[in-house]
Length: 165
Image (cartoon, rainbow, N blue to C red; front, side, top):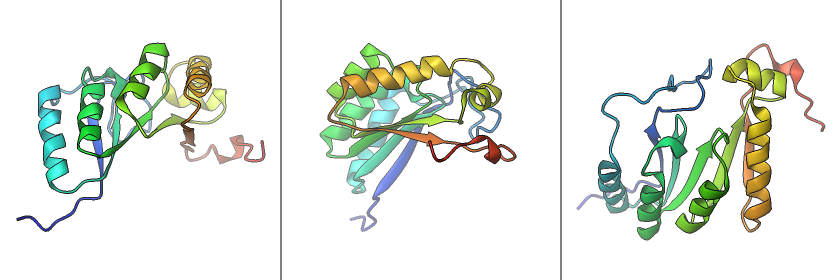
């Protein structure tokens, strides 16, 4: 019998992403060859449960671009493993929010790079309004759960942030 107890685990489901951020540690953008199928992720969920895992974070690239993110989340919850999601927020919309609710996701964190000019510079596209709209939609339609906003501060850009607002 295995005595090791895994408490937390981060699962990078895909490197497929709507962005190609200059600082991305995963070098996300396009899905890599040989990424795990939903069935393979479900097998991993079973293994995590057998190791005693209690909490996971689903990430990507952009986790919502993996076709089985919600199926995996439901399976993890069935094993009593708490599930959080870290997203860039671009794909948050009504169907995604409905699936987040249905799957019993514990928390959602949206990664922003800062003010719009910084976000545009590091995400390589101008669409912070889409992300803000998704965050607002989520907050207005998922009232019993908070949404976390994290900022990635790029070197040399620290002066751009107003931490008092």
